[in-house]
Length: 184
Image: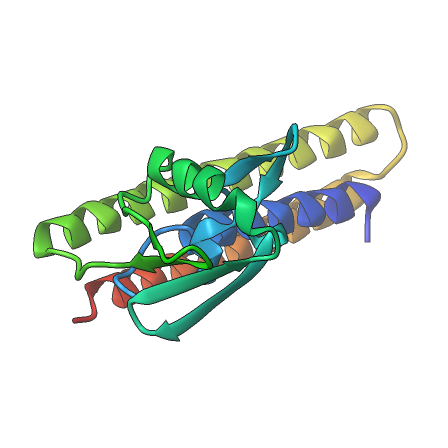
């Protein structure tokens, strides 16, 4: 397979991975430790993710418990959670931080579905852009005499195939997340 196609495939895989990570951060009414991955805390002068500062567990469907290794950091972690876009107020007993996730309203679920569709569409645009770049590189290689016209056509079809597969994967991921959000 052409190096151009390999590079395009790699970029498309990374785009899908970014979409999965972004959608993993959307709250679906049940507690998920992934929600805290992108929240950074000032830990003695360096921005540190909460999941690197202690254990995060989900003993119940709508509860996260954070057990920090350094209990002195509880106020800093609480402040970082309050500043985040989670919209949840943490509570603590001096040893643990608890996050109770309320049930999602129908309106909030619909907003989340719109966000999912928007992120999926952005990922599809990125995938198509990667395909366009690959095709332009193939045309340049053909013009420079590095590949034949038959090779160019073959690799363009290959680029279209991986684009179609990537877009199907994006649709599947978005559909799964929508179902998760709309569950009661």
